[in-house]
Structures are given as structure tokens and as C-alpha cells.
Amino acid sequence: MLLTQEIGSLSKPNWRVKYVRGEKLGKKDLKELRRWAEFLEIEEDLVKKVEEGKAEKKEVVELSALMAIRLLEKAGLDIVFDGEQFRTEMYEYPLRYVSGFRFLGPVRSFDNKYYNRAECVDKPRLLSPYHVEEFLFTRRNTKRRVKVPITGPYTLAEWSYNKYYVEKYRKLGYSWKNLRKPAKREFVLDLAKEVIRPNIAALIDKGAEIIQIDEPAVTTKPDEVDIFVEAFNEMTSGLNCKFSIHICYSDYSLLFPHVYELKGKVQLALEFANRGIKGYDILSLFKEYDGEIGLGVVDVHTDDVESPDTVKERILYASKFIPPERIYVNPDCGLRTRSWEIAYRKLKNMVKGAEMAREELK
Image (cartoon, rainbow, N blue to C red; front, side, top):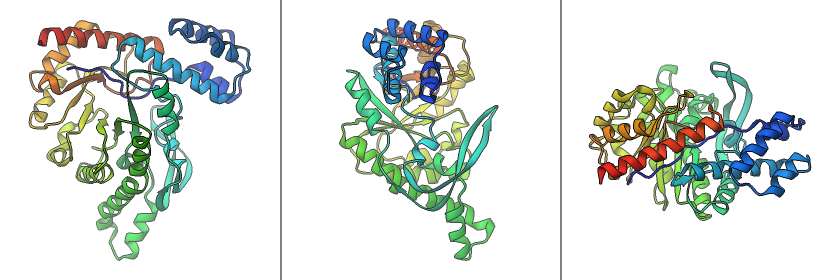
């Protein structure tokens, strides 16, 4: 009851970013590397190789991944990953393994953040499975349960230009007004069937038991939530694995009634903490949903560290709506926007708060 889990990303340390770029590490970078290596009890020879500039770039990526795993373990999480240290980000990285896309250049997502947006120019096909090496590395380096996050088909489609399918439906005689949804539906379903499903199958074949589908864009267009549900069912049908869906901060009421059409008891890992305690009231909508709820109890958009008591109270409040045996405890989202110091303190208090709630609910 109340198992604790990560959602995905941790920030990439400066020493890792600089080394991979071919830049020389400064005294501050080396000091930070040494401090965390000692705190997380990382093997000396791995650290020294980086300090001396003798490590290959892949070894540096693996070192940051190992440290991320150890950080999550030391915080006490039941379910871990590598902080997505093998990846650049969640959009361009997977599309590099897929045919049918052409990258057009950076577009602004929010604030000063940009991503390299692509257009779909042909039916997408998976060139080779991705995240498998990262999963195998994580599994070799932990005895905890491992959960692999994967960007979902709806988000990949929503964040891309839909040139191929729009042109296809124009040739079929559809008006601009009437082609948007069928063109989007076929785009998303092809990504689900031709890209995400075989990638999931490859992970399961290597031993993956828990897979999280990241779909931050799901509620962007409320009339397309049914497409997301259809695609999820298509790409997971018959696969022997526990599935979770992570949806970032949004109006979760838009998921209804379509969420009831998800096949299997799918976990929904959702973001609540940045709404305050009353933000958990929306859980009343999920009373009839028979899957698990990944309860966001830690705000990832602030350096303020929630106390164990705050985490405990959020869990107890949520248990008024959702039976505690169906609740998993997690941060709102990935912690990549926070320093490792803040992320560790937040996660450690999250685990302690979950323990306190567990005791009260016995």
C-alpha cells in the first residue's frame, strides 16, 4: 500500500552536460561530481576516470545514470529509473529512431524553452527500438522495481506538424474543416501501432514489467481525448505488462467519460500538489475508475521542500476519495527543473510522508 515511485526525469548535472559537449570541466564541476559521488557511494575508479578526462562520453552518461539511480534508492523509492540520463528530451530523442519525420528547427514551448519540431512526411515506422539499453542498464544497477517512461503517440503527434495525413485527406476530398480529426486520428494510431507498440514489445522482451506512457498533451484538444484512449488500447492490447499513464497538470475532468474505456486496470499518474490541498478534490471524479492513481504530492515547480507531514496530509486527504490500496505516491511530474539537492530532499520527505500515512491508515 502507498508504494513510492518516480515519474521520470532528473536534471542532468553540469559536469555530464559539459563533458558530453567536449567542454573542459571546471573546479566547480569537479567539486560537484566528487560531492555527489561520495554521498551516493559511487565506485572511485569511475569518478577518477572522468576527473582525469579519460572517460568516453558513453561512460559519463552511464555514470550520471548510475548516480541518478543511487539518488532515488537513497531517497527510499520503491520503484526507480535512471532519471532519463540517457536521453536528450522526450520528443526529438524518440523521433530520431523513427522514419517518416523531417525536423524543421526549434520552436518555443514555454518561457525560454525550445524544442526541435518535426513534420510528418510519410507513414511513421520504427527504425530500431529505443530505451532498451537504458532499461537494461538500470535493471543491472538496482534491485528495486524499474519503471520505464515512454512518450506516448498522442503527444508525439500533437507536437508535430501533420503534413502527410492532412495532404492524404485533402486528396480524398475532405474539406479543411472536416479533415482535422480523421487526419489526426490516423496519425496517432499509426504511431501507436507502428512505433510505440513494437518499442514496448522490445522492452517487455528484455524483461520490463512496468511501463509509463507520458501524454502531457492529452487534454490540449478536448474533442480528441477519445483518440488518445483508442491509441492506448491499440498499442497495449495483449502485452503482458503493468501500464501507467502520466498526464501533466491540466483539467482532468476533460478525461471523462473516455477514461472508462481504457482497457485493463491502468494506473493514472497525475499532478495535484501545485494546486494546493483543494486541488485533490477533483479525485472525486475518479471514484468510479477502478485503476490505480499515482498521486502527485510533491510540486516540481518550486524549490520549497514539502515536509513529511504535508505529504502525509495530502495522502490522507486523497484517501477520502480513493481507497489507499489503489494509491501510489509520486511527485507531480519529473524533477528535471530542480537541482539534485532539492530533488533528493523532496523525494526523501515524500517517502517519509508515505510511511507516516501508511501507519495511520493501518
